[in-house]
Length: 200
Image (cartoon, rainbow, N blue to C red; front, side, top):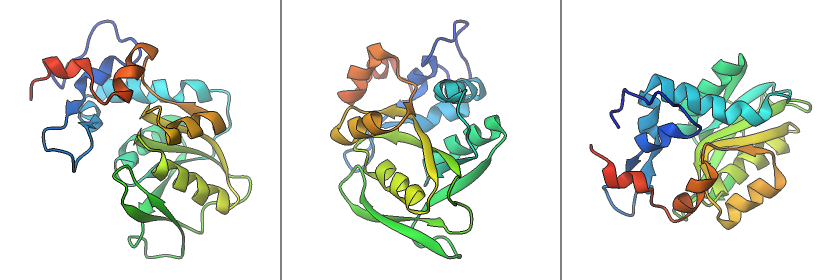
């Protein structure tokens, strides 16, 4: 599918075929979801699909995880008319922060941080990231938000893989993703059939 076009029938997840497969090897994620953000209708539909389960929930703030979660999270926040909080990789914020160690999807040990002057008890936060593979990054973000007394309303991502960490998130928090049931097995096997027809 051309990056700027879309089908007449925009069913849930139609935009997933815009995602690009990894061509650079195991040091990179197995696909690049960010190509769908280049299509304005795809991005809008993705955000609406992510927000669908939360229409009856009170959300005070959207928090997006460094770095690709910034794009999707800011889009969600704008759609909701709410503010956006960046959950950053440690060392980038020039203000007082709370930090949390974690292991990312590659198994590397990292630290993330969030500023101290926004979250407080009673703040209801929707956490957004581009993709949840092992769940380590999202779990650390949850711990950061909760350590400052705020409440995690839910977790939203383009996809949540059925790994141990992904299942933990699904079992313990309200969640949303853009993957139709018939595609979840492809996501868990890390290969989409749409890759067969993908043209750079």
